[in-house]
Image 1: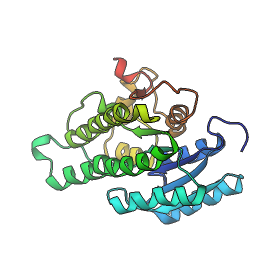
Image 2: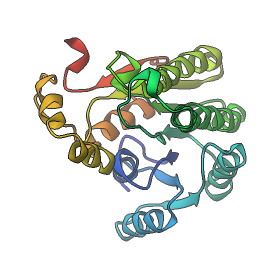
Image 3: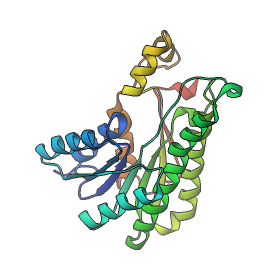
Length: 254
């Protein structure tokens, strides 16, 4: 699809059925990539892939839960079988949680957040890197959060999980740099999505507060996060690995 940032690349996108993941599918395909979308909701995935194909993009999907190592392996195997290789991956799958003080946080909430945000990323990285090594390298972007850089009250498991995303990013970047695999992370601020809209609706005043603490004074569009990930996955920054790029309207500068 033209001479874009990602022309001729095959890119796996997890958490691709909505929000930043769905936006990434559109942005990456507009930049010339063949995209493989992964998520648990097949109806959503099928609709997005159909829309992309109508626009002339190369797009496929795999239904899978990245907390399951077998599903992560199946998604990567599909990309390699379908397109002959895996050039890049955007590990976007993640969940949040209700705001609850640490001492009152239920164990099952902690387990669920860490399972998706950390174990799921671990499963993906292992499979993606293994697929990239025989080809001499590739590029991976992990979706963290400004919560991986700073702390906010009543969200301890989420904050811990997003700090872990950054830790895994830096560890993988260091370990595989000499093998040609670049691993970076984006750290979005408050971003428009179904989850964000639901959270704002259940917590009156939080949207205004989020805008007040963001120097640009607004919520990000998911396409803005996807655009940053596209650049990190492209060949325009070959010497950049182990970086965490805040895409937050200036929030972490405060």
